[in-house]
Image (cartoon, rainbow, N blue to C red; front, side):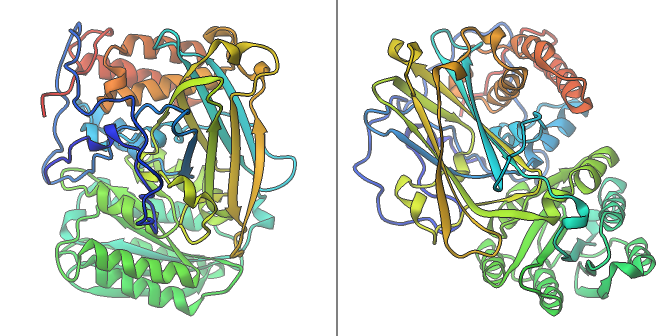
Length: 517
């Protein structure tokens, strides 16, 4: 499908997740970002990122504009813990191509990494604020808002009832699809505990119930059913989702986690496959207590847009599996976030004091923006946090000199969320940023903030953000090297940045420029 224009550059999107409100937020504020995109300055090396390969589909959500807090002091968005965009980009880069700019969602790059935030002493999550001078734009600061969910020991985890819905159509035949999906399901099954149940169904030209709801005590029976899966035929995704929800209804228990897990390349080409029909089915099931997560595989015909929207509407998370190591990360090392919900409909509202802040811009979360007035509207859907999940958001901010003096509190963060079984949300004013949270220099900032800055810079360059026209991959690599921990994913990131620089023209100081629209 043709890429959509980056129209969001000139307006702050209203609620794009769940039930968007139709009424205007207020008189449209003036934007600092102008509608016409200025011509980019000369770059040392300029190459255009490839458009989506084959029949792959991605959606361009645009880039958040610069805001004047004197006109709009509130930034409101829904929690997002998806990570698929980073894994998709990694696969493209490792296979020798820059990712399509539409495939890059900055928040999914940021939230791929574990920054080691301290867990909450009480309650479902802790919030950590920090800021430092921007390493990319002179006179700007980067402000980090981090949310860390509590961790829940396996022995204390709520029972889960899972339905594996596996795409077995012909498009799933390659080893990096059906075989990797089977390995993923084996890992997920091994992560379950007594009291959990699993059902398995497939969809291709027709749908099939492979395994009725089965207790994990009969693990051998579950693993045997997974082993017998083969791919072939066309794709009837909507019918498969209907069957999965029928199976989920058989084991629906209030207070337990009842979840459908879709494993697919997202290519639905037979049956009632309109997005609206499928999303409406998912919404009705979510309202009954059955959530949905999506796990993507493969490339060439990959439908990122479909997989992302399914998870968003289903109050689940969206991951992409490009290797057995990634499968182990999602289904073994970090599986607690999928299996244990600690808070629902989580919204963040960040308030910038216009006396202390000249401008601000949220990096990413363009399709998670919530109208400011809907922060306290509990009917408006938002994000789900699982056990151990962390969420990172970065703002590019221009502070006024008064913000750096003693006693200034330029930022206030509020959270609103529902308990896993609650209908009404609770709100708390979490923290006011104190002057001590603003590092005097970038090098003096905490390592986690510095590494997150590198990740944000990488995503901004790859998605051709007009705010990053002069940012350099060599700077991103230098920042990452100085801040990365010994963790494998952070070390891998450094290599990806270096590879991207080579793909952009063979020079580490390359600036990636987008071809003319």
